[in-house]
Picture 1: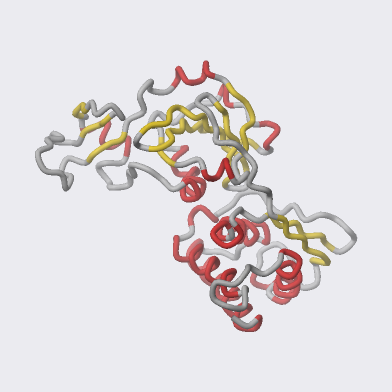
Picture 2: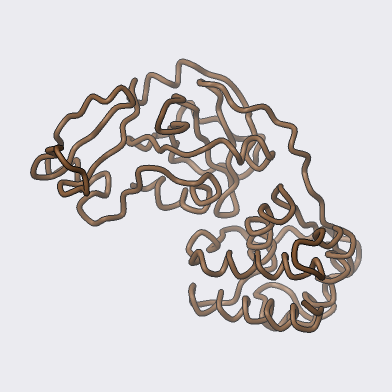
Length: 284
């Protein structure tokens, strides 16, 4: 893919972003979109730091609408990053070349970004955190970046369903402030994987097994009342199942609360998608 073609495609991404959320993306949201789309190409989520005229490091405005975007936009950005390798199956564009490629694009397309003007950005650096983190243990407290802030989660279990996480509702403004001990919790654990911990996107910020007691001892998955399973009866409203295979029928109230009734419930989330979904899950 030529640089000119990639510019055209990235410009369309900005337009698509605006169409989906009803407003221009901030530069911070554009970086966040690139970060979340880069892992399949660079084996880790890239980080971006812009320097403004006068030497100030860009921090951006609070809040993020990136979790509201469709999966198609993330897929399109991943395809653009892959196309910049120059040949199918080739090595990704180097980080320094990527920074040099994006800097003029950002300034040229500033009118399609919410919080900068043309020429505002004088420098751009791109980094790739090393994949050196060990898989998290039960009781580890994690800091997860989302919505321009940080959420806390705790590892509840590892079993045949995957890795169970307990999610805390509070949003923290910095990773150093993540402390969920006084936070309300989401009552339904979520199953995912630990890839975002291993690649450094989510960070272990503590270990507190006492917090495990505010979540179910055996995290469950849920089944709708009419699953495509033979020889299973899941009642009028659905059922919950533990990793040990114990099944209990649920009532209408629990089915509504967990999202069975409106088909919003997922038995598991890829960790990158879970990160994008935290804002919605935290208020469930």
